[in-house]
Image (tube, rainbow, N blue to C red):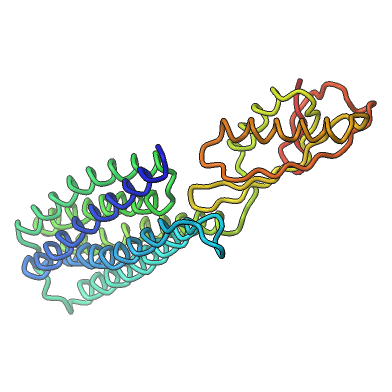
Length: 315
């Protein structure tokens, strides 16, 4: 998948999610009020907040598609991570709001201060419709997010998944409320809010990790090791640092070569390392290879692999 296809698919997902959440926000909020369901009303508020941050994410995604310029030589794709941060913040805020609303409703019921008598059957059908619609959106959005490796899209997929749990809890609460267990309706909203809160924290952690230029994960480090084992002359890897810019990677490697080699030969090995990585790692924009001399006595097969800061190659 090339960059244009990646950007187009990502924007389609954002626009589809926005349209679905506008529809659901109006439907659930209206039916939550008319159908006398606190759980469905809370879920409608959740969808309303979804609309707000889908608009924000859509703006950031379009800005991220701008081409590189003098101030941003790697492009503007880092805005995708910023968009994911915004999604995470909205998710956490929504979770806290739903939780405290539900707790207040439970308290009012227990104290006899609520006139809640159970939701209508229309509220139940709206909650069921939400479940099936969100299952489809979750599946499609996650698939696109995995193909494009777009953090913002993956964050939206998790939010769709949260909406499934939220709608399921509303369905159970409405059903049991109609059976006479009125306190289950708001309790279901409180429990789902905790699940939503956990997902928001996960989104914030992952998106901030990319913005903070952390070292590459074990999967990427192992892929680099496997590739460089095939490059003659590379005897040891001292450091690997990878920086993500949206879909792109910029990598800094420090390798060790035979100290008796000429500078020209060392440069040839470094160039071969660069070409190998460019050909095998998707969206790799830049590779900077530094090579250090290694004494002849150290040029022996290594029995194990360390991941960081020194990565040794098994022969």
